[in-house]
Image 1 (cartoon, rainbow, N blue to C red):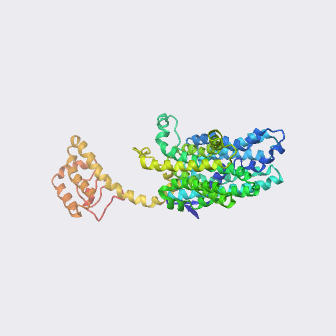
Image 2 (image 1 turned 60 degrees about the vertical axis):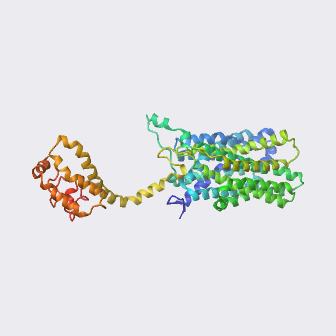
Length: 546
């Protein structure tokens, strides 16, 4: 039982599960701290407020630089070994968190968890894009988005209960990479590793240029769009508690409305391909338009139901934008540059999450002086989304690129590269049919080459052998296009040709060890490059034996 990849072969379920767990590993860094965030001041009374804030943000801060480190290393080193090393670092740091009893220890260990997650982040996208292609790849990115949100939603609830028992227990989720280490032998068969550089091949290394292996304009386009929608969505998670608290809502209602964000992304991830079929070429415009509509609903009413519908609309269309950008961006670079291009794209997620409060507060407080209006961030998000949609429409109408990016000769995008299992499958299926075809094509190609190469070179050196080539040359021309001539001319012409120079053919038989007369048997020295003599005796072809 397997999953269709779009490349003519199926992927085992156990390998797909391993890839899903790799994605989960990149998303849970810092998640264990969220249920104990409010208790950190009590657990560590001597810790400053800055330390408490850093414990929740340091995994994301560590991810950003090490995403690029992982992307650069993925182009040069074995990706499976790199994955195993990152998982070991992650697991060791997570295990030590279970026994840590000081704030500085949690800060250092959280940093190493973010380090491991950052290295693995570009690899997780490349693994998926190398195995799947077309609509199957888009579907898998949608499933990944849905699975991640389900896991995060359940993990937040589960770690909350574990924190009530012991504040160390939530760090158990940092041991999830153990599953990856166990399942890696199955994944290894389907990973396309970077080409190995032989020592002394300085020219081959110098030929690599990222700008030639990656469509920079397409990468920038998808990355900026993803950054834009990420900042827009983060206005909900950052400011919905303050706006609802200002309305006198309970903490339970605030938690319920915040959880709708995950629910919307789960639903859209499961039906991603259907949404793409409906929206088609206007999908990016529709995403921004409906996200703006969701924020308008959150502004025009104080009813929890209307606010919940608005949150669902925003998160639903963000759930379309995120996997869609992942799928499109995975095809803008060749296999060599895929990890680095995806590292740049994935960094937009963390950058957007970090800069969102600074951007929104700058616009709200510095420009419009609305410090105490907690609904104003929704106004900013709605207006900016509408402006973004107008920009896309104008760009589609007035901007037409003169030159289209093309990959270097012999290179294709990473999602179009055949996987290792596809290659092995083609080799296994082609072996039975390769030997007969080779036996048939070799005799057919040899006569067209042998007379052509022998005619200009052997004529001045051996004038006697030239007399035998006129009978072979017309025969080779006829074997190239057998549809124009029937078998009768092939049998008649060789029969009349050797009657004129009988003496020369006997002397030619001794030098090149080739037959001189059209006999009914094949001489021992006969090669596949001289079939005219065999054309006289079609009932006894000897070419397959040779």
